[in-house]
Image 1 (cartoon, rainbow, N blue to C red):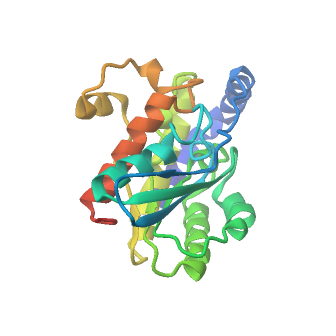
Image 2: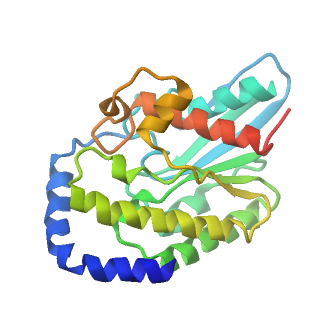
Image 3: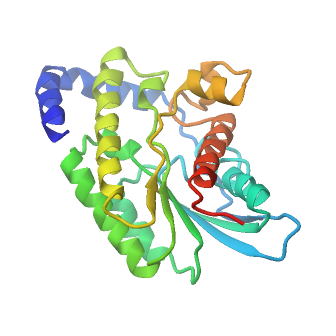
Length: 257
């Protein structure tokens, strides 16, 4: 996989100046959306049991593009799981827009002091891709992240959510989608290899593709309905994404009643 990445990088070198200017233009034109303000909540069902969920990651986990985290990824994930396992789920978000794996490791992990956590869901990969992190570097950083989490939570299941669907991002040019979109696929393949070395760590490897989601979930939606700004998910997309991850967690019996 690193050989494929290296060959792709060599082919991409002549395009780098173009990609740089295209990237700056895209960044200037994107609206500056805030993170969701609610960072914790609880999904209640008719139960006396309480299950603790935390989510960790970048802008998508921070809820950029959603009005609240309760109606975004984390809240929807908690609601879907609590309904299926008949347990109250308390949830908390640890995320920051623009963060890479290294940033999360250095600035977020030290903040996590929860005594008991039943499930950890991680959403990363977009910013590492945009910063052109190599698969080798990504592999090393993910392992460091897992080792640090495992120090505090040695038995808690950890689930990596799907990598961001960069080839679906509407503002990106064909060249940008090709280079950056292929890099995120390389990082996803690397993540598949890493999780195999850890017990009770999982990765939802299935791609988030518009047509597949519409068909699987019987949605009446157009591609633009899935984005708040062409890059970050809309509230609809967060809910669809969370339902996909919840389905994976239940299918793999990562948490159950």
